[in-house]
Image (cartoon, rainbow, N blue to C red; front, side, top):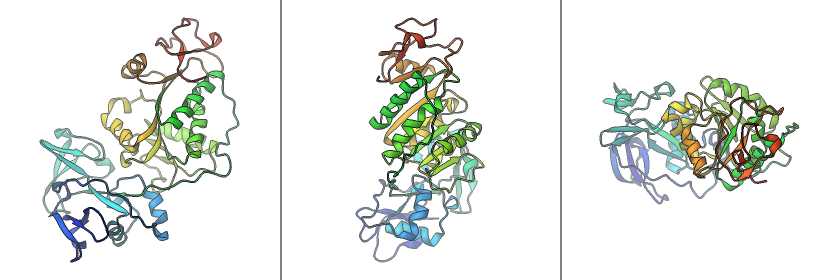
Amino acid sequence: MNVVHAVVPGRPAPVCLPESLVDESMKITAGPDVISRLPLLSPSSPPDTALPAPFHYVHEQGSGKELLQEEMDIDSRTLNELLITGWIQARPGLLPRKTGYRCRRCGNSRRNRFGVVSCARCGRDCAYCRHCVQMGRICACSILYSWTATPVYSKAEEPVLQWQGTLSPGQQRASRAVVQAVENKSELLVWAVCGAGKTEVLFEGIARALDLGSRILIAAPRTDVVLELAPRLQAAFPNVAAAALYGSSEDKQKPAQLILSTTHQAMRFTDAFDTVIIDEVDAFPYSADESLVYAVTKAARPDAALIRLTATPPSSLKRQVTKKQLPCVRIPRRYHGLASAGSPFSVGCRVETAASERPPSCSRGEMVLQAAE
């Protein structure tokens, strides 16, 4: 399908439209051609008018996502209407480079991870990304559609957090640090031994983000982690619109403010979340696949809070902690007070733990929490 860049009456800048939608009132500035051959447009701003009521639900379904048309729950006529009025924008799935392409969805730019297919859509031999093809093929003529307006979430009238459990002193310090990171939209590493209760440490921070009207992503490396965490989050936040996204999930079209997702499913989001929490940053496949790091980074808004959780941080994060480039809060003991055997808590910090909470092998200056007391 060929597209054009055209100035539409009432719109301040050119927009990308299918060639078939252009009429005499519009001025073509580029095209017609396949979308990847046209100049890249700046992101569009939403119209100044209110979104018509019939579109509210599909807006909530798709907000923050960049999707192929076949992934959207919108018919072609409605999609074209939303393109012309500026509520949805069209962007290329593959971005041209000097020596090939870069996939907008997964970030792949390695030439050996692209193929060529005889494309029924454009009638040409068309390059496509093989790296994320299992999520739907993105070719040089493919269009990714996204909403230009973000949903507004109102503050809940009742407390959103219904969890009634008790945190240990170490968990309480970590929980306060998470809340502070959410409020300041800053980065934080939660370095906790296995069994320390990292999920419960997040609850107050998630509740604070929801109170602020933020949208939250909790990204996990594997489907089994998503399936294990989903019922715990649903029980803690029973009145919050939440979705669990993985390969065979039935929640992919579900509107949600709180999203628990595999890092692979995060590829479908762009500039969508105010708070991003990455569980098990050291775990495979996230730690071994640069496209997953790209996906989670792309899903976050530029000023989003970024919170990483791990029991064994990679050396790159340890170096940032050592150089005081990354705030770090530690939980050196399991919930019931037992230290993890061989825990490598040896990087210096600003705020000390209580002597009773330090593993016997750690000196007073070695154990730290950067969380504010």
